[in-house]
Image (tube, rainbow, N blue to C red):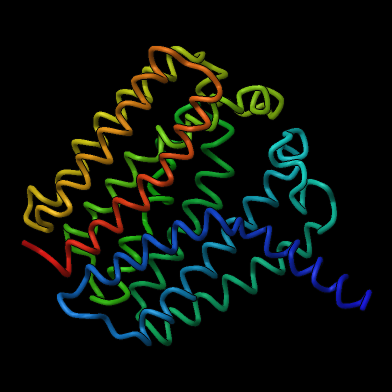
Length: 294
């Protein structure tokens, strides 16, 4: 019994390296991209294989992120319990784990989906694990803006898996997530500013203050709501999606305005939580509209 418990705990530690909650949202957006890529239902075998491959490479990227930022994570209350930060998993073990996950993911995508999806997903892995984590994040307070492209790629990956192509519609979904990322992440950074001050990372609330950051959360949310209407403008979606996008956007705008004008940490927490709900419901509305277009 003790051996089983120890094995379960060990598996849980390795799973934590993949940041399951973040991976879940990314994979969800990629699956939506798969369904939007075809007027009919996509091949379920390809959907399963693509979902697995994208999840594996995303998990590998997050494991590398945990490896690179282990010292930073150890200084922050939010991340101090991560396996790399507390020393329960070593650097070589994490490298092997990430390599195995990434290798299997690439093999699955290449052999069971298509090479385009594999290479796009691998490029996303490099963008997040190397360009964002190693180069941008410690160098500039605009890290989340510049590096946001890698985190915005899942819909394009899903679309490529089904269509073996990445048309304008797929890049429009990428653009929505790209613009969503700054207000989403800055809300977190604002109420976690003491943690980020300890980390040494040049996050916007630390380098430019809460007022400046709150104003930019408001500006990016305005751009986000405008961007979210573009699928309707290009006739990619219909009135169901437009109605949902406007309602969801109005709520986000209210949160962002209050963040800008009447900031407090509780409000920032609620804004961060809503931003996740917003993106999930927005993409769910795209899927609903896709099959009930009018």
